[in-house]
Length: 200
Image 1 (cartoon, one colour):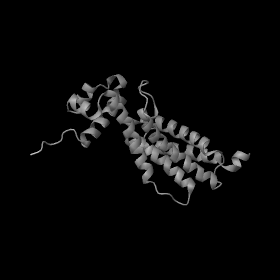
Image 2: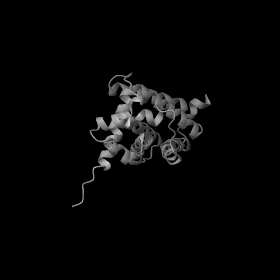
Image 3: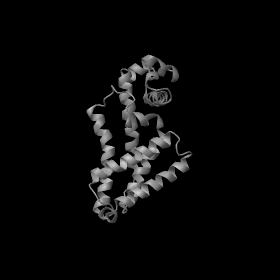
Image 4: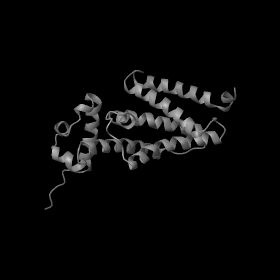
């Protein structure tokens, strides 16, 4: 009989999530291979086998966070309403952050200054931003918003990231209050970027 695989995809995901929770709760210095193995009830050799070393683990955490976000974006259905589709993209960003708060800081912050994502990972991460640029381009082409799509995407991301970061820290209270704050801010942004506002 073949030996059962113990270092499988299920263990990989468990280690990535546990590493993210350890990082979010106790900070970068707490994330060591030995500490992670203890929390995940596995051996350090399993971590090394799956990720190579600590930095291979951090790279995979970064990659997994954006993979999950990209999946949410891919699941969105395009409609005939570009502004609604843009709002849906913002909601997907917020939903992914709520589902994976332990990976959020590594995706959009710099808890490890010495960690630099590889070219392939940067391309994947920027692909999610590219979806935002494309959504805003549709809004501009439809005459709903005014401005350069890339510049508008930077503004929209800044608002989304700021609100999401504060929500994850509990500044807005329960999720329904955070959703209400998000809705107000998003509506104000859309109104401010409409052609009539820009011309005024």
